[in-house]
Every structure is written in C-alpha cells, then in structure tokens.
Length: 136
Image 1 (cartoon, helix red, strand yellow):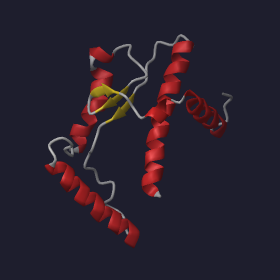
Image 2: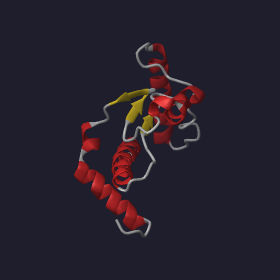
Image 3: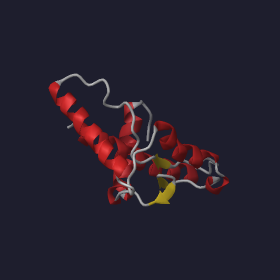
C-alpha cells in the first residue's frame, strides 16, 4: 500500500507541474516549473521503521539498493549526487526559460503516459485548490 501511495504522490507531482506550467504560461508569468526525478538515491527513508511489515520492507529496500549499486545501468546515488539533478535544473543556463519538462538523472526525458493526461491534470489542480480553499 505504501509503495502505491508513494508512486501516486510522484505522479501527482508531475501532473501538477505540467498543469502549473500551463497556467503560468497562459497568465503571461515569466516563471517556469519542471519535475525532477533524481533516480535511485540511497537515503535514510527506511531507517526508522519498526513494525514487522516495515522491517521486511527495509530489508527488501536494502537488498534492492545493493542490487542497483552493482548494476552499472542503474546505480544508486548518494543524497548529494541525487540533488545534482535539481541543482542543474535551477542553475544551468540551458534551462533558463524552459518549463514543463521532466528531468530524470539530469536528462530531459518523457514521463509516464498518464502524466500527460490533461483531464487528470485539471482534476488534480481543481481538487488541490479546493483543499486549500482557493477557486480553480
């Protein structure tokens, strides 16, 4: 369940980013937003898990990180290395004025097909506005 919720939250971030960029552009604002995915980062995410289920997840996560670390195509990164994608996105002149992109491991790439669903983007935007007491 928790992995599903995590995945949904990441999809929501990308959906929201695309819709926000659309709204900023339509409003004539000179602001850009992009979605950044640093890739596999070895963080302390599972360090404080205590239930039996959570402990099992922790051991599976550690095993996966070890597997990814030995995989040359999908290496695990330190938190500092993982942050480099976000830093690149906001600091490089190549991204100046460029919005509505999805960057994975420092490269502009396509996000999931579902993330381009404009109806889902608008629905998330509307619900988000409702939750914070704003009109969409």
